[in-house]
Image (cartoon, rainbow over all chains, first blue to last red; front, side, top):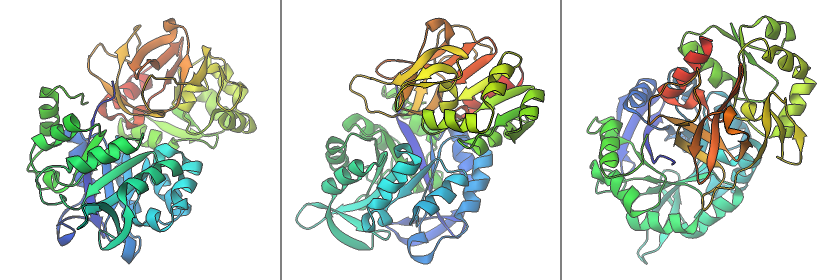
Length: 251
Length: 197
């Protein structure tokens, strides 16, 4: 049986790991390659490098980070942030990434999803979605690190990215991100029901039990967290022990 | 020396990184004479079966691989594993290398999505020099097609709504449907055992 995946995410800016709360007040916490090795040792099922400023300040040293990490870490590596073209995808995959995560650019240019999937395969293409509930109670899609509301319906967008060939959706709830009150269960349920591709829960993990809650209450395939693992409040191993004790298949 | 066969398709660098990490001497090559002198061979592969067989043939490597497979350990990885079989039905019927009896067909797991992506548990079937008898070992899969072969060639299956051949073998020919180079310590151990053959 497939294991549920626990995925630590490293938000990287200028080659350093940072983590913000609700995308504001970013603090630096370390070397991304070292962090990736630590997560690998803890049993991470996949590691995400997210170049958080790339979408508006240009791409930088992230490829060097990936190249070094790929020599030391032997689990799938996903890279996101500022990937604008098939050429960006190719250079990122060649550097050692196994998957590409596209977010803002996919909203601006949905064809990018299709082109990437056609050339590299759907398994390579993860679409990240930043979203929150508006005053009318509907979830809409945001871009540029949550700065711009595209007034695009979340469920419609999730179905669109699946149709275009995305292999996976990483669903980040801006309402719960950085707040540590648990993953956004209603939002996850809605998206998991709308699509047939794996959905990764993101945003809101605060306690060890939050991961198991997401797996028990929704059919999400994986759960991602950044700051929780970063500030060493929890290890991936502790999260997996909790899941295992609750009967959830983990590696 | 392990030669990672370069025919234009594949996860060459990931495999090379993993072999270097475990201290196994290795080289990426498409030179038939280096393939002949290698101690063991790895055939990687990502993409579609017909393209990969065509590229292998265009690189002039089909015959030398078939011939060397009888003389030294050969490991196919993912699509490289599928290429070890007689035929594949991906995009029509294409001949493979014919080193393990069987065919490669689209998976039909009941109620589960295709491709099969993620960490799945190895369920051991027949003894293999590449495996220990440890239980609860997970490896990383990304594929839509799977081998259909006699169970005497299957060292381990995994369960994905159907029994999927995960590690196959026939004499000195081995095939991993999963990616050992992306399967953490379990995968590195499999590569260590292969490098010691």
